[in-house]
Each structure stands twice: as structure tokens, then as C-alpha cells.
Image (cartoon, rainbow, N blue to C red; front, side):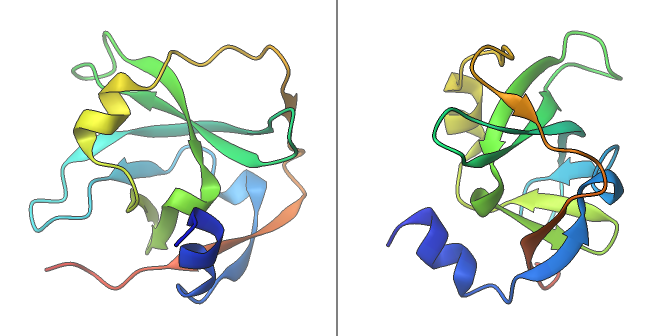
Length: 119
């Protein structure tokens, strides 16, 4: 099943891009580890929307930006979860550079799936 097909099964809801900026990004397990924070949304050269997350580090130090497909993420209250990629897969993602991307304006409405709490 593709990411888009999987995302369509998560009851996608309209959300304003600007409302996603600054949200914590969690791992979907009982411990709800914080993986990073949303810093911006971009469209890649294929038109896919990617969520740029400051990933890793400790207390904001040593974090690096990575781009995660919006279809791999869901909303959970005021946070977001990455449900389609493991922490090991996230660590292997390249550091995000804005080459061949364009920012998605904050007033743009996109659809993001919903999650139930995993605990």
C-alpha cells in the first residue's frame, strides 16, 4: 500500500499549514518520544508536500532538518506523529536542503490524517 493510500484511510482533515508550524513531532508508541518539531512545509520537485522537521538533538542542540512526506504523518491533538517511518529510517534520511523545493504558504489548506492516542 502506498503512503497516499494509507493516508486516505486515516480520515484526512483540512488543516491550515501555518497551524502545523511549531508542533512537536512524536513517535507513535506508548512512550510518545518527541522526535523533533515542525519548522516548515514545502513542495518537492514532484509536487508532493513534505513536512520539514528539526530532528534529533537534545533540547534543540544538534538537531538537523529532515523532510518527511505529509502522508507519513498524522495529527494527534496539538502534536503530529510519524506513523509510516521508524526512528531508524528517519535517522537515515538526508539533511534537508531547500534545493528544488518551494515553501507552502501558511494560509494554504491541506489534508492531514488523524490518529487515536496509542496509549
